[in-house]
Amino acid sequence: MSDAQSYPYETHLNILYGALQVIDVRALAEASTHKWYNQTLCKVNASVVRVGVVEGEYHWHKHDADDEFFYVVEGRLFIDLRERTVELSPRQGFVVPKGTLHRTRAPQRTVMLMVENTGIIPTGD
Image (cartoon, rainbow, N blue to C red; front, side, top):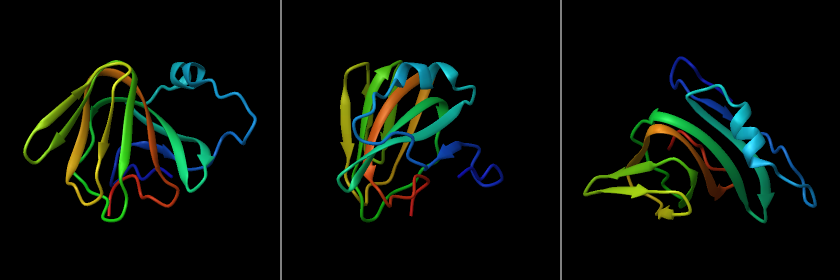
């Protein structure tokens, strides 16, 4: 799913890997040529794990019914909230609770993993 007119992001909701398959996050990240790339890797129970390769800013949004977990693999990720900004370095994670207005931004190319409910709309509700 990519809506270049509304959102200039390359977002793929198809699940690339099934159970018992090795997932090579490094290879996927290295192959990405987009400034804001998001690919669903696998399903775990009622959640999905996604890889994001990002640089720049995402738009402000929220998810009324879903929490989001962000984990930085490489680079730096800022998560702007109304009252503060959280900075994540490699091997750090953060949960944005449902209903929380937020945006993510990366001053340099950053690779992250996200864990979300399967039906979440990445661009927000």
